[in-house]
Image (cartoon, rainbow, N blue to C red):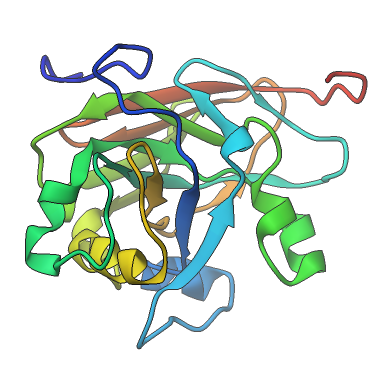
Length: 222
């Protein structure tokens, strides 16, 4: 972790997000592995419930409603100011920093529903961490996801269809972004299912390692 990193529970950290905006099919090989077309003109956006958010070290809890829950390692952009129709050339000025994220997905429910809201928004389905790293250009960083130490995803953020710079400007034309809001920028190829007891790590060059255990479902929890 960088010495400049901002812990999520520190006074310097932005507030909890009012929204988590995620980008689907933003790596060509990932779109291909799921048999989906790559958006060519505009990004495919969806929202994850803010209540899905957990930090580094927390458990990912498998819900009893799903038979297949997948990891999706991603770069997350953390918004640092009110952003509306933001100029693309000033995109870095809109950020408090960046962090690692895991866009956990109930894949069977995503296919069943034909849209993303339920499958992406279970409690614990948005781990972020290990901290916010400011002052870094994330346009070309190595990204790797490991499950129980085995590498499952390996790519670079430069392989995105729509760059972080474009995403900040584009999304801010559709909705006002507020301090603490998150943009999850998409996942590369290599997604796969998680099982109770797994340890999943998302590592981004210069940002750090997000690590979470996977816990069995508990239908009686609240």
